[in-house]
Length: 232
Image 1 (tube, one colour):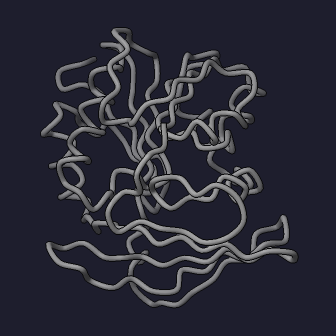
Image 2 (image 1 turned 180 degrees about the vertical axis):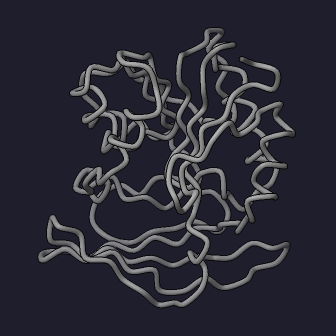
Image 3 (image 1 turned 180 degrees about the horizontal axis):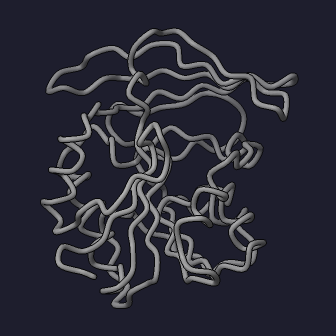
């Protein structure tokens, strides 16, 4: 079954483009950076992690190498074909209901900033539905300056360049963000819709799903750990 592109999302470059504008071949090349270290430091050793929006396994692989068990979820079957060593489930995150809970539920890649507020509510309800009573939810947020001081770029140690070129308002507090990934042999682009959120707005969004931040994992507050309301 061919998935339709999500409104306002598109991408260019070689290979399959997923409904949110991601190029499968691109995401198979991206490095994991510091994310696995941040995650590993925040959760119990050997935890079972539900990774929502795993893509091609950029973070899945190093988590498996650190001894975690991972159930990896993505709506793109082409992305999931790149994932090795984890249980994989093909589903939109907002529709997921596995009937089981996990030590850790992870929502990375700034997915919480989706421009569609109802989709965001669905994402967070999925997190709350699948986290164990004494478990935690790890969420990656955009940096405070993500939509400003553009264009800007970052050169990855692996030798490719990531550029955030523009963030243009499209209404209702949402921006169309245009990014570019430049490798020595090929360039990909991705355009997606993103809703900037202050810390207060982020925590209010979590509260709608009966989740509450117990601490921020990084000084820039880009990674948060949350739990069910009332959990100890």
